Image (cartoon, helix red, strand yellow):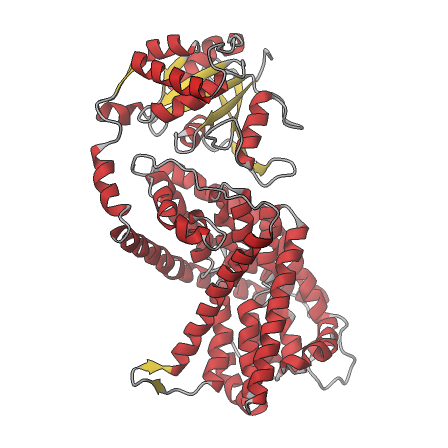
Length: 618
């Protein structure tokens, strides 16, 4: 063991307060990355003890057992054993257990003990145990386990003092542990856990009375779903309502900076690159941040409160029928606002197979960026009239577009379930922790982590692709005397004309084909791009839509409009979403699969729509 900096590994079951203890120890001195070759998060922090000794702390993924059933558990197992490539073995393992649920958590502590490495058991949430009348004899627990045992209250200032003190006194001299010869199988593990509980723990009842009272309603097959629907409605509204004003300010700020650059600097390619490429690209990255922060504010708060596992439990059977899990619900719901925070929210899904399936179908949810296109085409081609005396035809068409996206996502996930090599069922294994009030410190640190992950890693890819798209739209420049639109002469314009032969069976003209290219930056850009191509001047998408409506209503057929509507249900997602898939899966292969199957669905569905509508006289 090193005489200098000590390397600690925090391990424990999910919901044991391990990450709260990590935050208490390290504060802002932490960083988040991924383990090499996998998408599992790697959280490392540092702190200095009163003696001056430096400690490196690794917050390992939560695990129910070292007999790994998921990628997270495999990473935790290998790191604790010292077998993970490129990662040194920890000097001390700190196993965090929940004082209110020792019946479950001590089994894992016994498994960790069998590794034989220097180990400390941190009995967390001692304050909650005391309120419930649970008595934990720490000295007896230490004797039974054969390792040092300390109390912690991770959410309180000074709540980790006992752990720091024992590390400071003897952390470098903690001995290796002799494995328990009496534990050879699962039955022995359970029996040993019962013996330790009898010797060291006095518990008036297995669960808290308030938990039982709340669960009678929140886990009820009817009232529980009603409560969940109300929570999801609040989240959905907040992602729109709370984030939109800030997003508008960011959008306006980026536009103002672009105007200042254009008006201040001499005209030319460099000015255009700065204003339309870099500033617009940075604005296009940061504009998503409010939605991401609002969404993760709710996700972190619900996870910390103990409600999120219950929501997953309620929906697991329904989602499993489509090849997903209950934990897929919130990421898919949030994708209605934007697929980027939805895909990032899949980090709450522990099963790698379910997580990947959710990532691949999330873009089929109808995000807000599609609405300007839908509004333009529905307003131009679908008449305002009532159906059955009380339903609006335009509203029905919009509802049908949303429903088509949802049904398609369920169908695709079901097909993936049938085709994948792993045919086994992956049951949702989770603990229903006690309800508790989220701690502001942990929520704030969680939001900071999500913001930095998005801006530093996803943002760089988005910015690079945005600048590339600017280049395609601006080069080569048209010659002197060119009377058409400059974009028509650019590489993007030439590509759009070349694509006409491919998209003609869908009813798309060359103007639509060109507009699809800048639409890769963001779907809603297709509206302003069409306005540019038709030589219209408009300050924003709403103005562009008003000016475009009469032109496309006269120049396009109904079959073309319906085909384009269907195209945008499935259209290969914007480059920001592609960048996020690359970041979250660590694989260009999955990016290609996602873009490829969405393009195939879009093309086939639009082709069928156009040909049928055309045959019927549309």
